[in-house]
Amino acid sequence: MTDEEAGRGRDFVGYGRHPPDPRWPGGAHVAVNFVINYEEGGELAVPDGDAASETGLTEGSTALVKGRDLGAESMFEYGSRAGFWRLHRMFSKRKLPCTVFAIARALERNAEACAAMREAGWDVAGHGYRWEIYGNLAPDHERRQIELATASITRTIGTRPLGWYTRYAPSLHTRTFLLDAGYEYDSDAYDDELPYWRKVGTRQQLIVPYSLVHNDVRFARQGMTSGEEYFTYIKNAVQCVLEEDPPRMLSFGLHDRIIGHPGRALGLARLLDWLAGQPRVWITRRADIARHWRKEHPAP
Image (cartoon, rainbow, N blue to C red; front, side, top):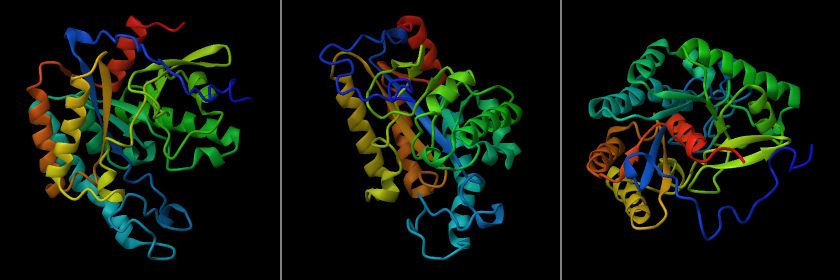
């Protein structure tokens, strides 16, 4: 499979000097999508047969214990036990929508969280059956994992996922397998501020780009230290886009076990309140962005 056949040929031009007008609903100038990454219970863990514990995006950041790391396990469990519910209360209180990038096995282990997602009307996108590096997988195994994740999320949430985001990075085969499985879009790209279509063989896949820049991973990796810093940083991003033409979209990634802690979460609460008062901001779900783009900018 060539890069072009896989929809993975490199494109350094994109929309260029004249991006299209997205024509967001209500004349909005920026579409904002919050993504809660629900991963706790899907990470590498010795009790699940892995050789070592997952320590990525934990407060320790690096593996300090060979084999099973009980500290890392506990940090993940904070996300599903406490952090998730803090975020759920914040969005529900303000009646604001968001998207969940969900590891299927994590959902299987917390039926109460699944019910809360359904009740809130959040859209749940596939994020894998469990944490694996898809670029290292045999194609048949990768296809099976996508099928397992799709069936599992459909069962736990009650509706099938329409979108997908691969942890780490996708393989050359991922986009083909997602199209085969009926996915309407993927977010396995960081290369733009608007959705776009990508040819995969003879088919077209809608790409809704994601961001690791406007993401709470900065608390774990780049030294962001306070909720106030987070509020200012994300607010600046929105203000920048509001002052530019044409309109854009922004993705803000969240993790239960990171921004779900009180000292960080207060900055998110301030941000939600500020955004709710911005008349030119459309706070929406990722599935709604994808549907809007399909309607306003159909596949070529």
